[in-house]
Length: 269
Image (cartoon, rainbow, N blue to C red; front, side):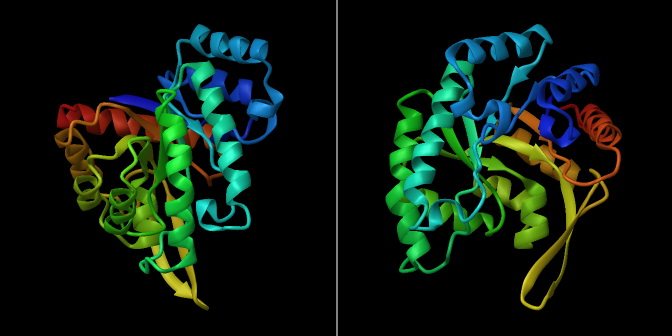
């Protein structure tokens, strides 16, 4: 099992966070490339070469870049043109860093194909998907907030080889109330990267969805069967730890690392 981490989860300056990942003997990192030091607009060719060397000198692999600019993803016609151009910049950065996956949130996929959000996604995503694919990169949308079946419906409808999935089992549990094990088989043809996160769905309040993130093994993700499912579909990529809450991020991430290693050893994965 290849274990990675989103270095931003350490809540440290990016290079300190990457060094911490190496100290914890984690194999890969998936840094945010949408702001700060790694924003493509802030990285010259020399800076890109230096960063690539810095990561490799620590024995780490960049499993993917986070290219999520927040907001409503590719569903909002008012901002979609800007988002397409910014995402292309992250894809170019990925090429320079030797990375073949950029993850993002495309927005909430509506059930109604006549919804403006559906139409906006269908019109915009092929452009950026093709841009990525032509450069040897996949643009992988993160699972949840919609059920896996609905995401598959959209991806099947678009049919673009550059559009894939960053599978986050916890998001399916916490937000969509979906079965993350079943979802693996639903989206098996699209999964190129995955997050290691856990949590539970809470009752809606005043029409708003609520959830709680928890340490790995303490939430609603059936980890043994989830890992078995990922093995069955032939997934051999990174399981990237994402921890967005907790007072001691390094301790939480070390716990997640140990949890994954112990379970993978038990399951012979």
